[in-house]
Picture 1 (cartoon, helix red, strand yellow):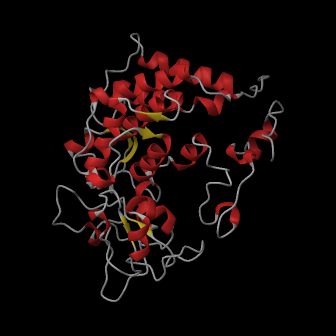
Picture 2 (tube, rainbow, N blue to C red; picture 1 turned 45 degrees about the vertical axis):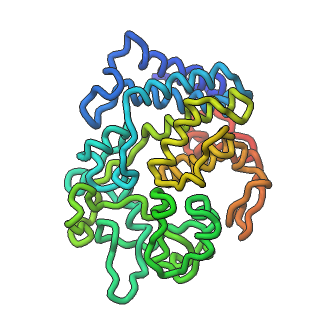
Picture 3 (cartoon, rainbow, N blue to C red; picture 1 turned 90 degrees about the vertical axis):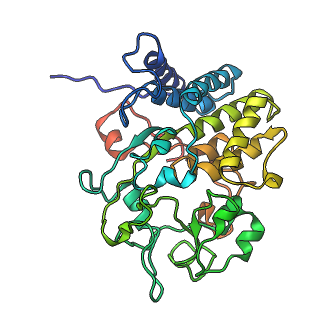
Amino acid sequence: MYKRQPDQSVGVSLFAWLKSELDDLTGEASHLKEPHTQNYPRVDKGAAYGLLARLCLTHKTYLGEESDYYYTAAKKAAKEVINAYTLCPDYEALFMGDNGENPDARNEIVYASCYDATRTQSYGGATYLIAASQGNLKDGDKKRLGTTEAWSGLVTSTEFVAKLIGQGNADAAEAGAEPTFTSVDKRALVSLRFSDDKTMNGSDFTAGWHVWKFNNNRFLDPETDYSERDKFVSIDFPMIRAAEMYLAYAEAQARIDGGTTSDETAVGYIAELQQRAGVPVASQVLGPVTLENIFDEITRELYWEGFRRTTLIRFDKFTSGSYLWPLKGGVASGQALSDHLKLFPLPADDMQVNDNLVQNPGY
C-alpha cells in the first residue's frame, strides 16, 4: 500500500499547530482536570498551561519576530499555573529522592518524569546526573548523593559558579574543600570536594566544579544514608515547576515593557525566588527588573534542568561573540558560533526515508 511521505514543516506552521493543540487542552472542552487537581504525577491543565507559557515566550524562534500579543499570552498562561501552585519552602527538597512524596515539593512541581529505585530503574534521568557528578574519592571519603554509583563524568566552570555565589566567592573557594556555598545562595548546590583544580579543561573530572543539585537522600528522612544502599535513584525529575512560571511571567512583562519592567507583580516574583534562596537583601533585585537580571535569575534557579540552550537562544547569547563561556566553539576562552547551530540537523535516517525533507542550512 502506498503511503504518502510527510511534508517538511516550517517554524510558522509548527508554532500554529502547537499553540492550537495547547489552546484545546486548556480550553473549556478539554478533558484535562483543572490545574493542580489531578493525582500526582498525572498531568492536568497545569502542565498544558506551563507548556503554553513556554511556547509563547519562545515564539520568536518559530516566527522570526517578536509580538507583544504572544508575550501577553505567555503571562496569562504562566499566571494560571502560579495561581494553582506554590513555591516549595526548601529549594533542595525539590531535587531529593522523596520529592514525589514530599507535599511541599509537590506543591511546586507541575509535571515530572518519575523514577523509582526499584520499579523504574534507569541509568538515565537523575541517576545519570548524580553518578556522573561524583567520584575521585579522597582518603576516608564516601559518596554523598544517595547512590552507590560514581562515574566521574560531569563538571562545570568557575564562570558558571560565579553566577551563583559571586566572582569573589568563586575565586576564593579551594579545590578539595567541603561545599559551603549555600550560605550565599541556597541554590548553590555545587562542590569542589572531588576536585584537584577549579579550572575546567574539558577532559578531566578533577578539573572543574561538580553540581550536587540532585541528591537521592531523603529530605523527610535525613538520618538514612542512601549512598550505602541504592544503585538507582527515586528522584522525580521536574519538567515544569511553578518557579519557571514566575520567571516566564517576569520575562514576558520585561519584554513588553522594552527590556526593563517596574511592574509590581513581575518584580515581586523575582523577589520571592531570591528570598526563598536566602539571597541577602543587599544582593536582591528590589527595583526595576531588566532582562539581564532575569537571565541571571534563570541561570541560578533552573540550572541543570534542561533549559540552558533554549534560554541562551531566546536571549541572543547562544552564538554571540559577546557572551562567551569556557570551551564555547571548542576553544578554551570561548568564541562565537555560526548562527546555523541554533537549529539541530535533521537525522540522517529521516532524510533517507523521506524525499520531502531538506536538510537544515549549514549541515
